[in-house]
Length: 320
Image 1 (cartoon, helix red, strand yellow):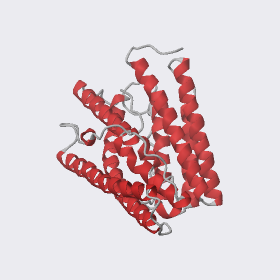
Image 2 (cartoon, helix red, strand yellow):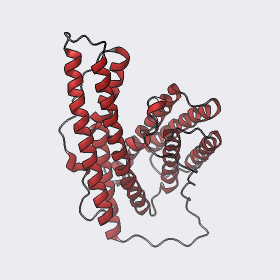
Image 3 (cartoon, rainbow, N blue to C red):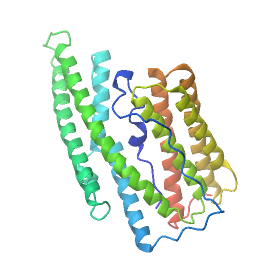
Image 4 (tube, one colour):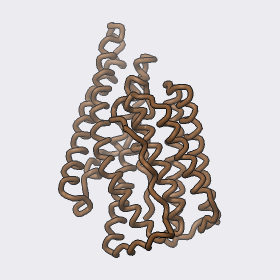
């Protein structure tokens, strides 16, 4: 099973106003890319069937939980916070979307996938998310009532107070989500390396992993509230070098899959262009939004490629 991206891991700290950007700790240095296969080194031992099975289960868990965070009930934390910020600017509140049923157990660590310490931290993480979301939902319900009550005349005072409480609850939710994702992302990366053993697209997949590692690094730097132009420019250079590595022929798979992969590389180049421009001009709010949109486009393109790669790998065929 090929790993799809947990989109929210890429997007934390990239969007929003500058005064809300310091939700995660900054990074002191740029992480080096994961090395590609070196023919001069001895071949690593093949993973055992048990290791492959465990890696597939962990990847499935990461994909399922990531989809829930991105599109399920917990996605309301970001959506309703954004709605409350819209209210502060327009004094109108967008409609609350239907995000499906609440299923916090999806984020609970499955038995045997994580060690005891990780399992405790993951359990604490989703419980903290649940608690913060409960508080946010309560404040948002009060804001909905306030906006609907046309008899109240207080020049928006209570609405502003409720929006501030929603923002505080959202900050707590994001911190808990960040901690949870750090563990899952690290273990998903380890699982991916096991599943890549003798994979025909190992070079291309590692290049993609390295590109997303640099995007996360840039997001962490920007979320810290600091601006380090040389570091951001280094990240741009690494992203572009990984694009070149991924683009080199041959691409040992069907043309339709290659088109999807090259589509992903194009989105990564757009992200690098935006980041380079920001590193030269300074990161303003509109550039944060552009970077957030570019990161999302990268992740969506990668996930489309990943789904098709899994489809082909599982013997289900695929378009030519």
